[in-house]
Image 1 (spheres, rainbow over the protein chains, first blue to last red):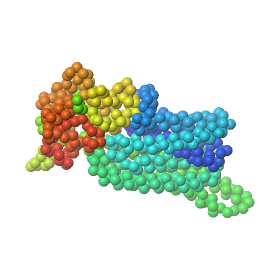
Image 2: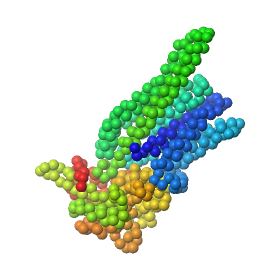
Image 3: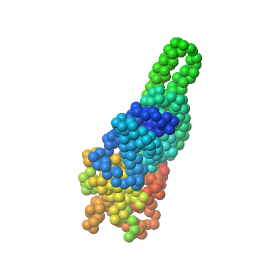
Image 4: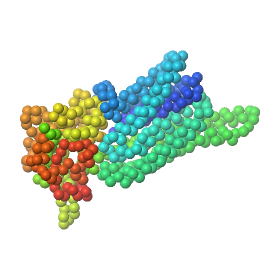
Length: 292
Length: 192
């Protein structure tokens, strides 16, 4: 797979952005919790993503040249935004780890990183939209990228924040559900319009997509099943109206089930989004002479 | 002086690919790297089959997407308006490869950077023609002031054909004397 570095880069950065967005929201509701594991994971993912982007370059040691042209193109913006987001997230993680007493600085930096991250997702999608690849020239890819960031970020935030996530769990599950539904609707339009595109490059992409039907089916099954799983435990917990020791035992079992189900949901959603991103790159055919 | 660009007479091209080989030789290009590439197309069916060739390279577009997208400024406009590449600035991100609708920039694995037709600027700076122009045995490939080329070879010149991308996107510095069958939208590329 030629673009494996870019799959890793976009998935890691988007997941990290998602985590930081929900960390920022959670901080608004609960200023005292540090969400240490979530933020350290976000920093780790951002750093892995940034390093993966270097693997895509023919001359990674000259990567610094890319910082010389701020705002001249979507790609230069992305390089700046990704660097700023990764730097800020790593700084927040470092402060939480080394100097947790600097709460006001931490609380201020998290929303800044989240906003830069959200802008970066738009920039990332714009990069592909600008190319001469008809399969990428569709507004649905903005939704695909945002849904990936939101769904992966939210589910990782649930997993990594444990009990601290508290009442937010249902809201997060609901947010993932909405993001995934919008992703399905956007991509359904995308598939139809790609098939109807008369350009030979688009037709070739569509044929490749058709050949990857199994992977595509797997992508949606995993994402939808994973998102659906997040709603099950909360519903189950509601039905357990018991008293005394039995209630404690059932509560413990429910919590365990809840935690296992959440892990499975997280794995399914993330693997589904990774497969989707693989397909995204695998079907790219540039419209060129003889393929117009 | 108007914009500099290539003139190609499709009617007279015999598809010998001498221009392609001269370019490859001049740039010492690796296998699979062609800064000028001749493609052959067929149209129609018996009893009215037809065929034509297209010799294409970088079109040094006025609205070049490779320049617009380059994150390092490696792709830039030279003082003569042609699109040039500063290899020292290139980081090999290959964004220009995705952006150019003419397939001009090509990634060169060995060096880790992209390369493309520079319209043989070194030769032109010494008053010579690009290598492909001088090599063309039919004398149907020219490089120069587009306004002068249009005056000399006009009036039925085009820069848009069914096989080519929409010209309004990048404003290519290219004029083609088309063969009538090249306006047929039902073309098939012929592997040579």
